[in-house]
Length: 211
Image (cartoon, helix red, strand yellow):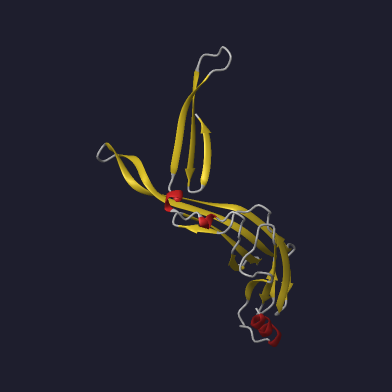
């Protein structure tokens, strides 16, 4: 960071226009509720028209596993099974901080600093990675240019939560599992009814269903 700022002051940066994002208070990890402080550095080699500048923090969840899938073979006219990769992706948390918005503005050939500060929510999962899934965080800076390609830069950072899912690396704990139990239920004079509750755990995701 210091060398980059020194290059800005001496004018020895590359002549190519670019966007860089830096974290000012990052020491290897953040905690839920922490304040993320940094700056977006814009370097223009010529007059540039901007429509907006924003930074975003994204918490991304990914899970995948191999399992058996039943299907009907239309050529052989029979039911078969095959190994299939099941996967899913979800952005659990997204927040944006607008540094500059409309109307479009022209900037001269220069290097510009733009500061930002974003508070993380108090309740967040920590960074996690295993064979079947991951939870990751990244900070994205985007420079919106009308009728031109946007400039973008990003940084991956670590969040440490009070409950560290990385400690649950026992293979047995990471295997899909399910449990169901049948119990009779009688309410007043209503004839005995049968409720089936299914409790299942899949890749650290928990569901409770009544059937």
